[in-house]
Length: 443
Image (cartoon, rainbow, N blue to C red; front, side, top):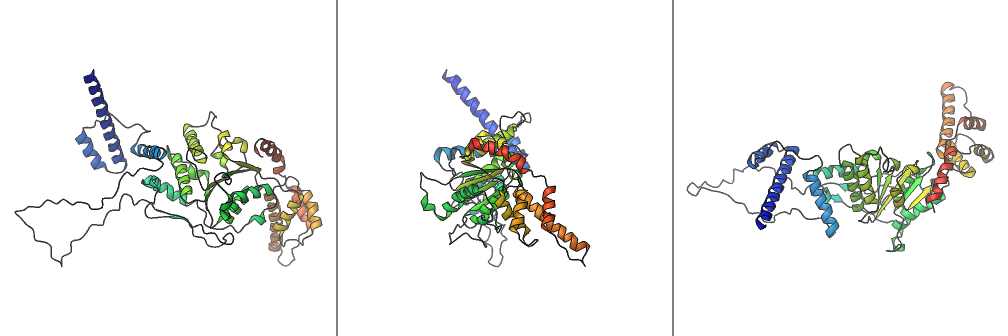
């Protein structure tokens, strides 16, 4: 009985060593070390009748080990370390002693190869609080050199992902503020509670009372969801790192690549905290998982995304802001993870008057009475549709000046009214569906 157990143990050990050798051989070939791979194949007598399965490689095994160690011990393992005093072994012929080189003859030294750990270094962002929000130049995070306290970026593939995510950090102000919003006071209130107050007065929050960590803006196209994101970015400059993430940035055609990208994104946001991650048109990434047409790779990505939004590891200092025109297409698990869901409404009459005054600028002499009459006829218009009407009126004046330079170009409120009557509003037909949906989730 004992002998059979020993034989089985030896057999399993042999299989394990053989599989490890095959994995090493494939890794060497994929990274360009073909001569070393051929030597290993001959020395280990590896047969060509076997090949590695498509879902197994050394990189994935290494990353799974890092994740397991992090969950179990709360930190990443130290796989290699630099030798402080390396011992150099030289073989010399005692009978034939070569004279030492003269001082004049300097032996050329080969350029030292970079250390394996010289992959990436993340310089933390300086979030210095001033008297108000910074509107000018701000020092942002930069990725360069070697990595600091983040073992996930050790491999070259992680470094490439981090460099691509680096490009999503917004480094400029859009010159807009909370005063530029017409209406939607509820959305503005929640955004300021989530972004402005925690950064300016962190002492108001405790371990029990924490600021909002996620917000979903939904509503018809053109109501100002992206404008609210721009204002949030401008108002948070100097206090937080703003990641503007698109669907194309976090999706890839390669197997397992999308999961790596979303993981690195949240790791970088955690390192640069406080951070804001903005997902525009998020329904493309968070659609329902029970659809028959949904691919296995898409389900794996969504599961990874859910883990980072609200998983075992708590994400501190990260605020997730998202916008969508199709909230009913989002999976229920993602909806649960958004703490607040706010409907971005259509402007009312008074707000439409303010929008006309803003977009018309100096095209017409301001007449609030006439503007109020026109605004009443714009029921169901979105803010963007009002902007387009005013732009069309401005282009009409430009064409008049261009075609008849000698004549004075003049436009009137009647021209504006005629343009308004030619526009078919899109928001009015959709807003009822959004209001009905929001009753289920909004507080």
